[in-house]
Image (cartoon, rainbow, N blue to C red):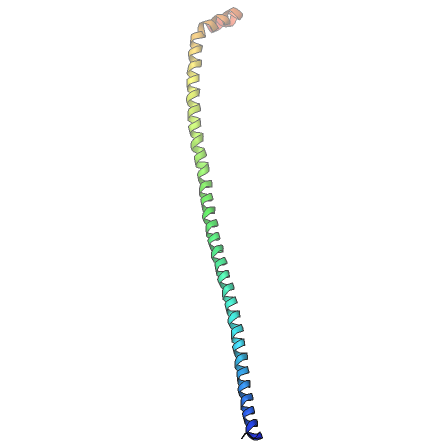
Length: 129
């Protein structure tokens, strides 16, 4: 038969078990909460690491492109100089050819010029001759 004392002891034991189980449950809830917080932090860190990787890649790409631009900027004046030199030599060759034509025409037309000089200014032509 169950007496008041036995029931009180059983009830006290059950209360102790309930209290222990509630404490364990609270501990487990705190642990689960910390786990969720850690997972969230890890996700943020992973996202931050990904952003950092993308940023680092972008910086390296910008540096690479900047160096390419510097190389091109260095080569542009050299190419312009080469093109100017070619143009100069072509123009100089044309000038020599035209100078030869002018000289030939002067030689060919020298008698006519001498006659015109004599006709329009006979006194100067005598002094030169």
